[in-house]
Length: 433
Image (cartoon, rainbow, N blue to C red):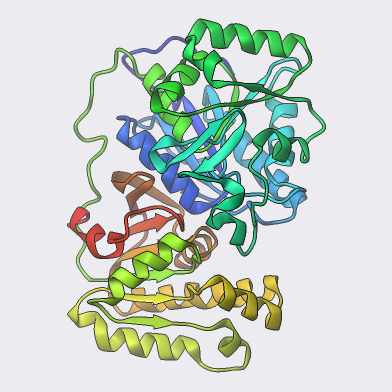
């Protein structure tokens, strides 16, 4: 896959994104739509018959972040092959801006597999999780979440991928046998030609991955222009903005590309499975004026009909406005549940119940749905039978509304746990009407 110079017309998609969770896919799709690209988000491996003639970018949403590495590799390769069949000129492997993974993967194993099939053996692949719009920055290879080192942020308490190291080169090197290098801040400051030269030097030295510092969107623009002809790029959602800017030079803005989803009738609800600090803040802000219902995985395991109770709650309160149903809890409460049930069992019970509740809400007439948490979003979208969605305008960085292909049509917002302002659950509805 080679990238020709930007043109004023795009007859085939130029970018194919493989995202390792559903909220991350929405994050990158929203970034691309905000850059004026025509974007379709696909859930699961796209069908060969999918129409792509009026699309610039295809974002494939997978649920591979926490599955066994072999399964993540298999699904990611299948997605890449499907994207390649549509004629995309560049592949983008999208993972979380906090590099969510375990020492075994899955970022390294998936990137290795994509390299082996789609990248010339001697070419280097950039690794750029930094996304300044989300306050995720990389300096000298060290990842920061806001002002905190990654290992000192709330990510150290993540129930599935606790992050206890802030060094991206070290995290990646534990997951791959390929040599990992770095491009630092001062090299980015030198501009596009200097970055290209540095990439060539590192490649000639045998380096196959390079972690790139990112402190500003200007750095992303520099890097995007430097790697526009690379067949495979990896990173968070930030770098696609740099790629889109470089690719889109000379294109005229089109007013309908970032249009909001069409208004949908029906009631509104929130499903929250994330245990992040920000989701907890959003729930507390919502709780001040609207009713909330919390589900407990231990109660589910003990045989309580939590699904019926949640839907009874929704049936009572939906006529008055949005309701929130969540499993979000403090790190201590999450640890207690995992200790009682086991980590995998607690997650499975919670996701299955929240997905069933989402289906029940749709049956009650809900047509506008916010889902918080990557694993929860995957479970809900699968349960509702959503296969593709058109990407609308972002409510906040990384959080766009989607218009589904289902009957009835719905507006869905898939939110990564740490994204959005504290008032998102109260304010997001203004952007869909």
